[in-house]
Image (cartoon, one colour):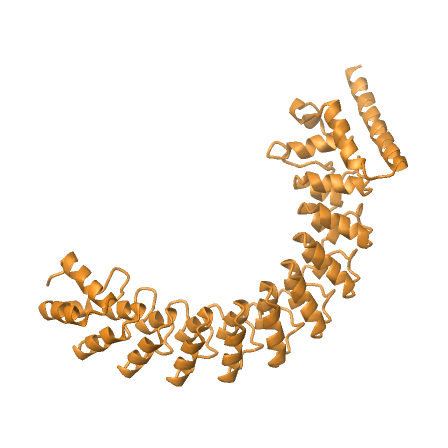
Length: 429
């Protein structure tokens, strides 16, 4: 039973080039190779299906003793292989030759129909339906239907053809509650949202299991056009809270999506100062994640939470400091944050709790602004700023403020520094 690698190579070359004469000669000399499998269980039929060689499949079938539907180790049949590569003629040849795998899924639960939709092969979808596929709404192992996959991948024409062929899954959620509408909103596909509504979807404000609506899903990812589209099509979920109490504006602030926040406010959001279940506002979210332009936008639009603590006692300044966001700290101070001596409820000053792990600039900035430090930090020379550095930093931060405001803030810093020096003198005395 020869498995000479040169013979195997010649056999596969004959399949890929559709050299029927060479194929016949090799199989005549080595008939046992008709059911040869590679390491992952791929058969000669798999190779022919992948390469789009219908004549090879017909010749292999003519020679007999060949299984058209043998799956490889991943559960992929020749039918799935042909579908994956968009070979309509191979699909037709397999069915005509006796394949029964038109709706057989792989190990992930993905049927040929699911794969065709995922790839956006409209002609393959039409062929599968014509040849008898009934898996138009069959989900994969994670509960995703073909229509959901089409929505997530921005396949408008695919959605239309699925509905024409009788799909009933336009509003079907997966086990986590993600509908096609939600998936399209999260991915930023406004055109998909348009077609879903046109085709009858009723889930424009339907949340998933975490109470996230399409509006919130779009806000998390900064998809402003999707938010405008949802609003135009009737969404009223501009300020709906998810399970953690997050609003769409908090979601947008986390990602620094300034234009999204502006759009939400223009569409009627009144949640600029609304906090989530832990007391975090959009201002905290922007500060924590280091988005200075978002902080400025929130203040300009009317946020009044620049000094508001969370339930855990964290002000936006503390949130910025604890995550090493120097630009956010500078912006907060410039816009009026008064936190020089603020401590949260656990008596941690607004400085990173791991200052020796990439937060040195943050600590030096706060030091220049007169923040109080615990002894283990105040004695560390590497965390101190020179007078010139401190002066330059304060000038940069306060430059856009009025002269009176700058003088008052400089006075506050001076008083704070004087208190620290006085305390230090008493300790030395």
